[in-house]
Amino acid sequence: MINQAKIGSLLKELRKEHGMTQEQLAEKIGVARRTVSRWETGSNLPDLDILIELSDLYGVGLREILDGERQEAMDRDMEETVIKVAEYSSAQSQRAKKVVLVYFVLGIIAIIACLVMEEIDLSGTFASGFAKGISYGIAVGAMIMGILYTTGVLTKFQAAKMRFLNR
Image 1: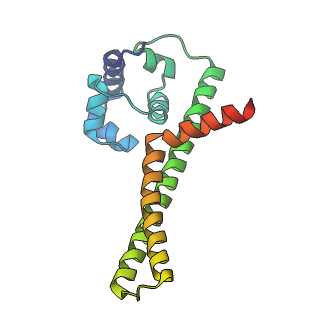
Image 2: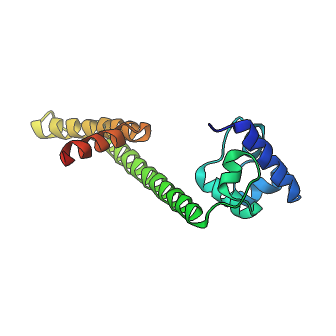
């Protein structure tokens, strides 16, 4: 079981051993000083990619940080595996941001198209009504897909689909 307070205490100890203030550490790794404070009080934990960065910065193993105490060095193979997992996690996070951005932009474009069609006030033809309906549908669909993607529902659905197809 992870003891956040213990991890925070070790992170504080390591930072002080390296003669850094919270502000200096925050600046060095690209986070807010308040974030460092939250780690050190145990109210939050750093993301895995930041844990790896802290491990490298302080010259300690990930296992030490995650256990919240000093110990023997982590097996090199194990550390490489954890680094690969962190890189994969970071890549997945970047991909998620891109997908959400695409949904957002698509939704905005569709809303703008709806507003333009309303402003132009095309005659009540079937084609103009159809175009408006499609635009509204795309806007709402993009928002719903963005919400489902950011909440992880789509990922769970995709995993369930893959399990079903592999049977």
